[in-house]
Image 1 (tube, rainbow, N blue to C red):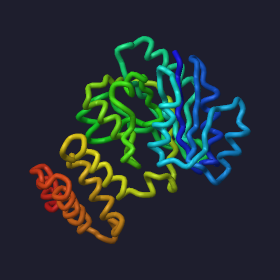
Image 2 (cartoon, one colour; image 1 turned 180 degrees about the horizontal axis):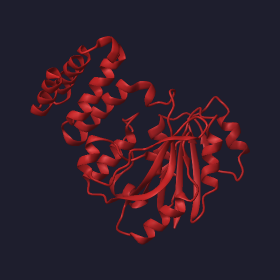
Image 3 (cartoon, rainbow, N blue to C red; image 1 turned 120 degrees about the vertical axis):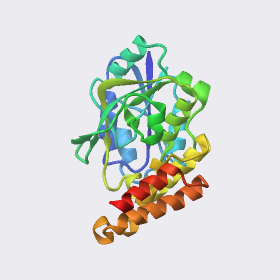
Length: 284
């Protein structure tokens, strides 16, 4: 069984060698690793040129991370596909465990494992909050850590690649789209990857944009946005302007007002559940 690992990259020279090494040290399958770099201006290209054993790589301007992943998928032919960003790492033995699981469960299309959030020095500081597969629950929270997920190529053949209109939640949107289509997911209770979390990474640096895109994605896929994501968006909006300490007991009211505005924007109505939640905050 051949495994294709796709790494999108842009100006992650400080991390990419560790990413490459985490793939190169894997065993248990024939592994091809391709890096699609968006034309980095830091040390990334020099790291790619010098790395041993060599990996296939391209460095040229692209349309962003999602485009790079899709290009990587199209350029490979492994039966199993992994997507590892250029600042994340696989843990030792990850691919061998995934391949063994797929071989034992031919009916499963997508498998995801446990993972950690890691810091700049690769030290794990918290476990990623992973849960057993449940599509309704996935609509409420993204409990799948992207580098710890692998899927069969038949998934792409049948359901297409990532949505290139998404810049932040392309992974979450893909999992939801596949789940909606009936693709079979399974949780492997093994720790597979480290996902780097730090102040400068793309998601943490643009919380309002991230949550707005998630809301847009839900409308596109399901026609409506769950209240939980509307509240998450509202928190991001309010926390951009106020802290809990400064706003005092007005913080909850500000979040409630922002959530109502978000509900009207994306759902064109406010649910009874949202009204009940806000009312309960007011009474506290």
